[in-house]
Image (cartoon, rainbow over all chains, first blue to last red):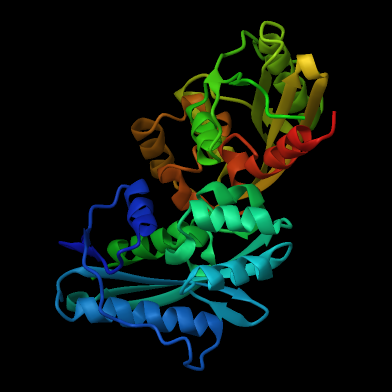
Length: 194
Length: 194
């Protein structure tokens, strides 16, 4: 199979855009119109895969010739799914809860290429361990940075990195897109025989 | 103790500059004149600490009021220390050796602040696991990117990230500077009582 005529990233996340550029992809951004309901009863991995697939399919239905990539990143602690905080209070509560502990970051990724009958969805998991964070540093971070657009209310690629003691897994998965496992699947798709 | 009047990074690495900027540090870059001898007989951690300290002390001797930061990053596989490859052939050999395996990245960091009698040196270790890389992809990488200025001949922050299956430890340590453990030590220094 040859390369797709067009690649679409169905996400407005600036981090995902940056990561796909890092591996020399050329693509267009067309956001989906999917709204996430955190009350649906799905296990974390299934939740992330479910929404990644919904987002990709939503856009793919209008661009059947294109390879469409959807993604959904969540933070999981104590079996609770954390998405983006809705305000600074929730941001404070999330960071207080994660301080000094290990949580999981799960990104679901879905690849939809309708004209070639390609539909693949998977999830990648990374463990992240935070140091203890003082209340004043949490308040400093919330007021100085903008954690409201980030699952779990932190960016591993900004100032908050000083509190990330260690990770186990793919770093870029924590930023919002598992570059390495995505690339393996992408390569398998474009190198497959027709 | 208050903040140092001046912070100096004794390194020309663009990655280290970028990482210190990521945590909002203001600093000047003044490279050391230390030359690394890979034939000296030191264990990997001691090797990285030895050169980090030599570099920091070299610059600190001329700027006694400043807090000087030196760093040295090495890749260790099978008890062999890999620095920067000297040419494309060595680059090819390094990447072939690391393909499909787990290696260690060690960064030694030294903080020298002579007027306050501060001299601290430590090392941080991160495990990095590569997927199997085909010969053609290694050749593509070497010809397209510039791995000659990087220990172990790869950049975890560039296209090569597609072959990094997982890491265990601090991601930024692999890029050349362990932000989190450095910041803890720095904070302890500036918050200490006189």
